[in-house]
Image (tube, rainbow, N blue to C red; front, side):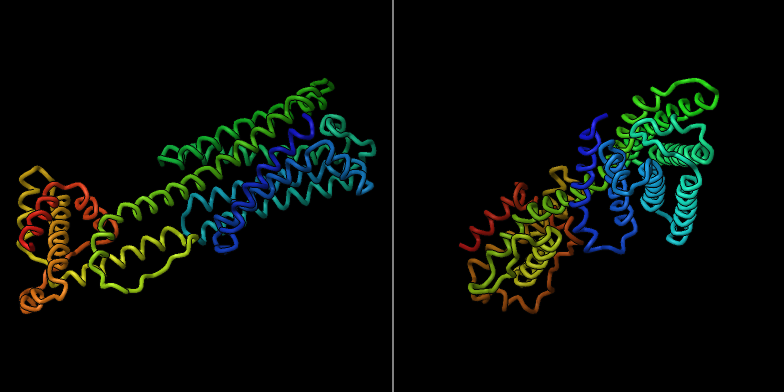
Length: 394
């Protein structure tokens, strides 16, 4: 593999991290978000420092032949731990149990990282090897243990991740299941990487030569595995957020008909709340709901139960279910009240009816308001009520 084969995935991880940083800045206490950012950082670091040009540069900068070997092993070990920690935070559960399990895995892999550095310091690896360090020093005292420790730690993490993600994928649906299946696929490549590396190293221990497996077959498998796994972690989070954002904007748009209907009765010169173009969709929906409820308060004196009861009965007669019939009934009453208000802007008729029982619209959240808005736009029962109210007002 050439340098760009490592640097391109590293750049992709960096770009994904940049997109996550604003969310981390606003919600840095979120353990899941922190875990995602750590994973992206370590994945990018692994790709960067495992590239042969970087290996040579690091060895030259430090003045220690093969210093890059334990550095890359430590980064891969830390990446394995970050994947496990992210998975536990992602899966959820009692916070104290998640923290306890995460600390256990972090402590275990921190011990492996310390052992890698100590064993490298005790060993002797004077000849720089950019691509075949594992097999070249497979029989060197202490270095062989360092190689075995890193491969074993990586293999344990890979098998644990495959087992956890596969079991969890059978219990969930949607983007989460897709992401978990992608992670399993990525770690399948990682397990194949472990198998090829171990085969080459064990072959050296037994006096055989399978160096090509370690030098030429294993690196692409590791790169593909890390990249696919990182995509599996990020994809469900990004897609779920995009789906939630789309749903919020859709709610905002669907409330438009009802909002315009009730806003048409607002007195001239009534100041409106100005929203900046970068205002979140959630805030826009809340403001639109507030405007609609304010409109219901203005129209309240003109609400006529007879319009609602008649529209409700007609909707049921046309085959509508209970929920839809209530939405149609409320929409018809709103439409009639808007026409009555337009015909009597001074509110004289409303004053005459002030002593009568007040009729309320009991819309429970945005979902009910969306149903009313949809009925205003599409229901023939509402259209008929609107025409009748206009004729009566005329």
